[in-house]
Amino acid sequence: MKRVYLDHNATTPVEPEVLDAMLPYLAGDFGNASSIHSFGQRARAAVETAREQVATLIGARPQEIIFTSGGTESDNHAIFGVVEAAAGVAATSGAKQTAAASGAKENAAASGAKENAATSGAEDKPKHVITSAIEHEAVLNACQALEKRGVGVTYLPVDHAGLIDLGVLRNTLSLHPETVLLTIMHANNELGTVQPLEQIGRIAAEADVYFHTDAVQSAGKLGIDVNAMRLDLLSLSGHKLYAPKGSGALYIRGGTRLRQFLYGGHHQRGFRPGTENVPGIVGLGKAAEIARKSLAEDAKRIAALRDTLEQGMLARVPYARINAEGTPRTPNTANITFSGIEGEALVIALDLKGLACSTGAACSSGAVEPSHVLTAIGLPPEAARATLRFSLGRHTTAQDIDFALSVVPAAVEQLRELSPTYRKPVAAR
Ligand code: PLP
Image 1 (cartoon, rainbow, N blue to C red):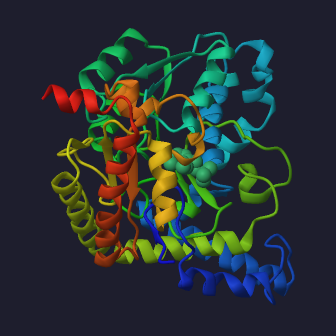
Image 2: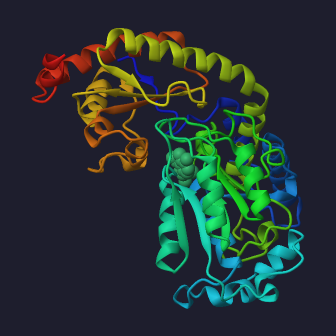
Image 3: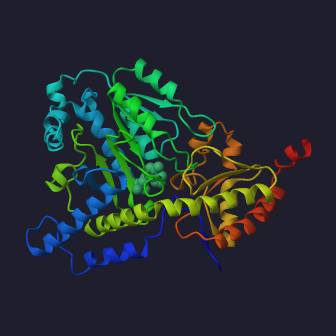
């Protein structure tokens, strides 16, 4: 059976060139990058090349990149790391000792910071974090965990397209001078909506708060410049970027005070101990290099295919609705509501016909709750449940889009026929 994959926001295939770059490090060049013999030196050289490749993709310096296991770890490291280095977290978290005793000083010094929380007198001050209502769970659940430890968190609302309001952000910052971190995702995984990071970065800089972005869905799809965006921290993930799962990176601007997240050896200057995943890191570096070179071309071609898909759906499926249309979006993401159907039933029906797509975020598939992103943009729960995400990739073809347009309308119609609720709105028109 022909199979078409339109779920690249869930994960991407490893690019053949990426696999080729990785294979030697799974075979003959298997050395530990910390070893001083020639096996180790070859692995070290490969890791440092990858660090440069990832840094170049986002306009950073290589020494500002640490490799992680993926987006979730990078997000958690950035959020807990900043807040706990700023101290003042309730003693139950054990954070009182963190900034002074657990390596923040060492890490801050390594990245150029002049002082740490222990010397800044910040231990007893209340702490506050600002994020948005549509972040990925890797950020939202980290923020909720911080709340349980006594940290205040504001979840900024978004408009019908998923954009935060910069006026509300400014007000929240002036209402909460104790804010230590602003964490706002670059591109949303369900809608593709892109936040204006340059403007947000200016606001964060004026307020003198650390600025982190989850760029898991934008890295390799959109241009990123950590300096123009005034970012202090940025998370990215290999498997969304045609590199293997289990690889990722965190950008940490030199001078950022960050409590270390894992304890162990002195790998990656103590910021991220643990023997480096050399093949994964090499794959991520190669994927970053390929993405940087093909980004502009890919974006143009993929956006055209995405537009064909959306216009085709609107023309063929009555009452289909494109969410976040007309807003800056990643080129590859289409989020479409087909009222009167259950999204999960449609995903299964389409999979049986050979088309892979998803309802909202893959990690919340199977959850009974409608997507928090779609409800945040104002969709009623039944509309949120009737919504599908089609996410295109570098190798998506015009034939793949034709295939989607040939199977989705019939599947929607079939499910609507079975739906006890769908006839009512149609009859009322
Ligand atoms: N952030 C966003 C926006 C994501 O879409 C995802 C994965 O879907 C993650 C974070 C988590 O990344 P990882 O799967 O590498 O842990």
